[in-house]
Length: 114
Ligand code: AMP
Ligand code: ZN
Image 1 (spheres, protein in one colour):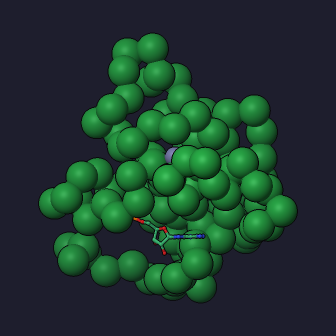
Image 2: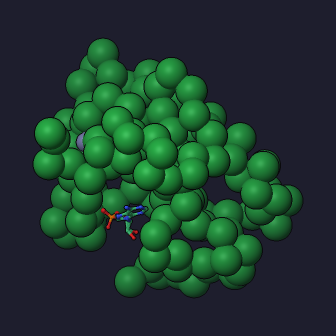
């Protein structure tokens, strides 16, 4: 059994309600939401972070962003706007080492980020 919690979620789909799923990725709500809407979009393939994406994987990025847009639409945050976050490595604040986009919406975001 894999140690990666996101691989575990993907391999056991009954453990969470996916907002959307296709052959490349899944979207699900963050367990500790930082905004009224806060979901994650994750590739099914285990990639540790954006740093590990090779030349041949780069199309995954675009595809995942497409999923983010679709779920943003489904959750009704499109019109008012939303934020993509892609924490990468220690200084980026990444805590789960399986590539994931955060999408946050439903409130005004601050800048600069913490
Ligand atoms: P990061 O700090 O960018 O690596 O983000 C990891 C995110 O995963 C955090 O926002 C966590 O709240 C979230 N998270 C961790 N475990 C789960 C889980 N089982 N289901 C949904 N979200 C999770
Ligand atoms: Zn994984």
